[in-house]
Length: 364
Ligand code: UD1
Ligand code: UDP
Image (cartoon, rainbow, N blue to C red; front, side):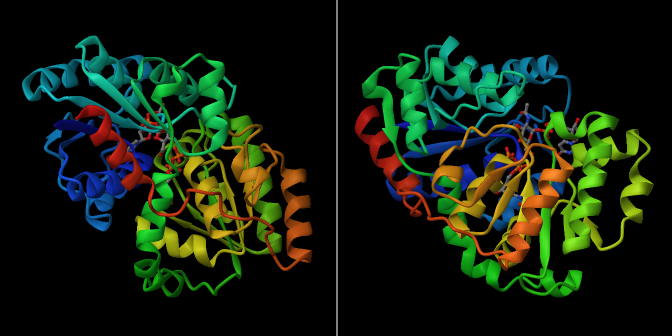
């Protein structure tokens, strides 16, 4: 049995790492294909090193582009790889352009498709990821789901019962494996921070960073938050470029009590998360990680495809609304940033093992 495992963008690497390990442990032969969607060392190479992911067997080196260009270019470059390697299945994770591009290429060649992190729905088709999720799930043969809402969504969309598996959360497998190493990170010293005396911020969704109007709200929100606690903002390349393009870079750096860093490696970022009083984010993965860590999380979006982070976890949705964020931060700070939440079932560090076992049974 041979499986091509695809990854391409930052959040894919945390998901592929435990799958690669579990496949090795259960004797499943696999190759890693990196599409090159993310390519800056701090968005790609560093994760392979820190998460001990085997070096990619193939790198499609596709780089950045419009949605159509990037998706089409990945498909063109992935097709000959699938033909040459002739795998029994292609495995894709998450919801990025690499996910749908490689998924579609595989099924067009008659190769079985496995989707890990299937079934999540924000019900907001303005999000590029929502299109990628719906399309990938509609063509996948095996759908591994991280939370019960995903199973309900896939049933509603008519996916066959025998293709659905509630496996748990592979991103949390990685978190659990790396927690003790992250404890050793010296990032707090490097940034002059003290435990629980700061708020971590991440932002990269197009709806939040791609217009000057939204960036002005981001600045307002940061100013309010920085009055409550120090803000640490590891800045995603998309957000960094957007601030520059809007001519707001100077304004951002002038706000006092804000530390801006390049994107951080996984280990340093995990230490930052575990030590934060609270997290402000629009990231999908960070909503899950804060739930697993029981750290309060304010999500700067109107919806989430990960509802369990609200119903069971520590997540609060505010949208990009500076007043609401300020209000929530005041409330949390009045309560010493204590979070009421529990870690969802099956976010236990063993999701990838369950996936490997099921893949072996199904494809054998
Ligand atoms: C992509 C995913 C998004 C995911 C995010 C995780 C899609 C449609 N979007 O968004 O779902 O949440 O990754 O981080 O797949 N850039 C660099 N270096 C890099 C990569 C990108 O400088 O290594 C810059 C480029 O200017 C690029 C921009 O960031 O144009 C956006 O990159 P892109 O991959 O198109 O989308 P993301 O916003 O990163
Ligand atoms: N992350 C990281 N360094 C950072 C910011 C995030 O290692 O500076 C990690 C984070 O812990 C999570 C993943 O990146 O595991 C989330 O990726 P991202 O927010 O880029 O994408 P999304 O999850 O929104 O698709």
